[in-house]
Image 1: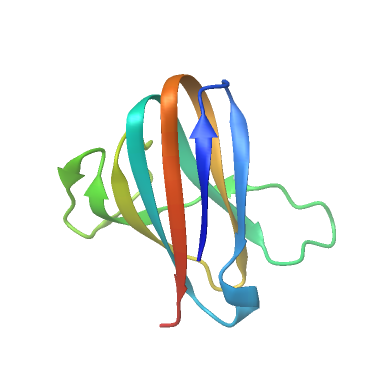
Image 2 (image 1 turned 180 degrees about the horizontal axis):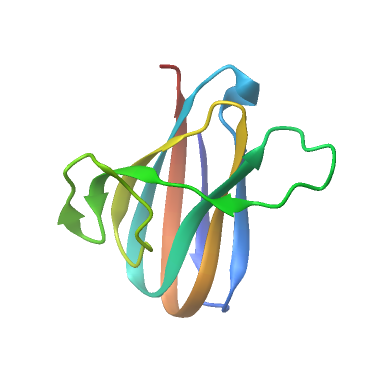
Length: 115
């Protein structure tokens, strides 16, 4: 389990790493809003990149998205508030790409799960 806080400092990247050094396949992420004003997306690249591969946007399963109950479908909707999501992470490094952040903070916690 890992955790941290995204502060209102504009665009930034938060690297969450891979899911259990490749042994686990899903990363569960809980984002808790503290009057945060911002937007983020989920990105990934292959685990242990050897050629400088870039992070690219990937979909995630929404359980609770932007303070509303999710329907457990896969989406790539920008996250702007409290959310509980599952990210398929087998063999991938995961990153939160914060495109804007201007007020408050956003706490995050992750748990890696096997499938």
